[in-house]
Length: 465
Image (cartoon, rainbow, N blue to C red):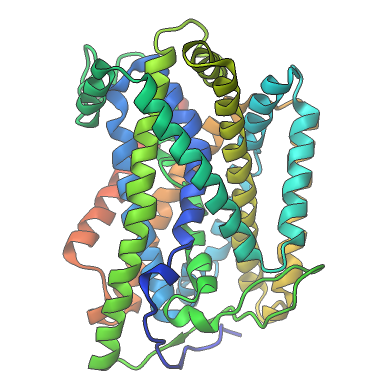
């Protein structure tokens, strides 16, 4: 039996812009705790600011891919997963594998625990990492409305983290550092252009993939804008807590609106407003944050011995900040970084659980249907957390190792989903609702970039003698 066909419904009126703000905070939070705090500062602390162009290009690519994911959900009120399954039912198995395998490695939680353990004077942070995972599961399980829990959590973290980084950068970065940043944006480094000699392509690709959310996590944006009520997503319903929430009717499949001039004009208003929301929060704030975090790392620990060891450069950063300003400020920096990483891992678990749940239901539809979504979500969530605990107990606790492994897998997943999303929008949407030639070009550019780097890395690892 196939998925339910799209029925006609009314396209809701566009609310004021301030009421649309929210989903981009979640995606920004996913990026702040991986690429922004760990991987790009790790690279700039070792190779200088000449590689920071990659961070800016990566987050720009993600802006355009996120908006194409939003486009489909805005028009039909269903995710890209459902749209693709209408054409190729088997595609769900790819999304299950390419989501579970990269994100089962809880490297972000391990990083959070290392930084928090440094503040508390704990050297072995394995048990602390496990405690963090369990706390994340409880937060997601006990919040009455899942989307509101995640959005509120990320808004608080970002409102603390971004101003902290901004102020520290203004205090600590010298005029020459700012000049190096400006040159790095266009790929000019100290004695190299774009990529320095000796940089590991895997590390660069990992950072590039995490310039924002990364991997299949970008596709979760469809869930967040639906539960925020964007466009036809107003009719989708929300996942609520099994313990504290009032159950809502959740719809797996969406609806469509009549294609007339009035609705086309209304769609364009929606499209303009959600572009402003995502540009301001995700691309602008996210882009500035990633540049400043790279600059802060460069200003404090560039050239110091030991930067190549795990996330020691972040700890060194905190110590240098403490020496230059005060120990309390250095400690505060480490706590903010740890909290941001904690929030990112929590949001990763939410996004992956949503993706795994929806694709599981689609794969077994109609034996599994909308009535099962809530229970499957929490089952998948806790299975992932248990998997993370097993990984930690097995001795895999090096944060950078886990992050690079996951990010390289995610870069290849992004190569696949960029192509599929663009193809879906060009073949499933009416002509007035399709992406412009400029956006098509940006998606193709991103598709080729991620694909080229991924296949190069595969060749380097497995075929080069």
